[in-house]
Length: 316
Image (cartoon, rainbow, N blue to C red; front, side):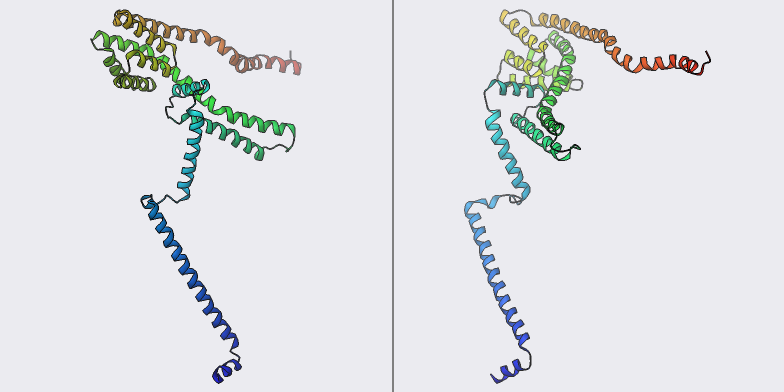
């Protein structure tokens, strides 16, 4: 005790306080580390007992959690929208198929995209419009942005359908001509469809994909009439539906399919020629407005400008 009193008396009380503080801190951190290790061991044991030890390494990452949440939203939307049997849902599925979108969850993606674009564009307009907030034009532009986002997916689908229909109408006469050649060569209708689909792959990829799906349906057990009817629905053109009806009536009446195909092929060629002539005849009417807006003003300036200059200068 005398030594301790002497040590404290010499002015080393501050050093003793520091040593006591370090000892207490070390003890506290040691206890906390032990508790933390025990908690980690308990969590791992609980994970193994649940059978989650086969989970992928990134199963707990933020990216995995976000993908899982997005999948839940898609599943919820698919459950409440894409599986409905209402007439609107059927029409939407038909439009998506005609646009070349065959995913089972395409309807859910469509609704999510439409909602997300509407809300997103409205929010962007709310924060970044260079107009004074609170005014009537400001709110009108926000509403217009939301409506544009709501209608954008439908316009995109309509544009894709229009392009694919143009390709189908352009390639269907060639499809009929090749079918006539295959029928004259003695091939059956199934073999003719398969052969023609392979021949048209480079020129008309969309039409070829639909023909290949029709061949797969026939191999899966569907009748020729049902497969061609579905082909007409996917193509979305009247020529394909008429072709399906033609084959069905030929089978029911027992008439020659080759003769029917030859007559229908001639009709398809005449229709394509008629469409080309219609476009050629409508060209002058379509060029009238650009000529009036772009060419005629230049001609008037070139012709009348010298006269105006002479009148202005008095040299007439």
